[in-house]
Length: 252
Ligand code: NDP
Image (cartoon, rainbow, N blue to C red; front, side):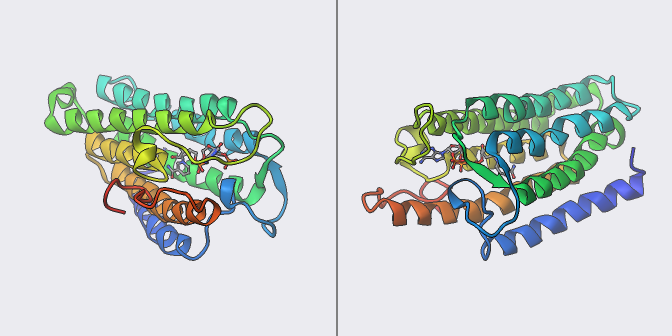
């Protein structure tokens, strides 16, 4: 368990990393998925990459969580369950549903994501089970209720948008199509939109700098990528609907 001072330092480090990431990603689009390109070192299979890079968000999170003195309290257990619902979906269900064919991703991307997930687990798990000091009255606090509603709204948008994208391909296909329906008619990356709502809800439900640092990092990571993805769709598909935005309906 990181000491209180170390935990605060790690939280600020995650915030700083969000700022650096946001600036860097306007210049360098992370080279995986549709933005994959040569020159980024050794490659690994995509499905393996997702399992490896997201697993620390379960394993390290649980390891840190169990060291906290409030690990058996109701509110930390409820919030930890939210987290694990998201990451069970991300680590197990999402990779199983994807149709990666023989596609690969740079091992470097997986390594960077593992590092971030370790940092994020060391920030968010101790917040719940050690430093948050949530008592059961938190369950009826408006911040918990609003944050929880946002979290599950975002999760639903994210999972449904990912599922719609994954259904665009038949087994063995690797081509891209223009997605349609629901928020896909409004933005290029509704899955990223859902993810940002989700972790904003987490920040509110945990009412913590730890939660805010993850929400900030998520937006810093996904907003520039969504803008690059909209640009990619417009270049690849001349018929791509002009009214679609990158990530926030009607806004950006
Ligand atoms: P993408 O939207 O790029 O891709 C999701 C899946 O759908 C991939 O398997 C992709 O295949 C496939 N796909 C996407 N568009 C099409 C299309 N037009 N036609 C056919 N197939 C398509 O999302 P990411 O891979 O970047 O992210 C996956 C999930 O992880 C998302 O839910 C995202 O929110 C989350 N995430 C969260 C981050 C965070 O900071 N919290 C960071 C990064 C991701 P292919 O791989 O071949 O392109």
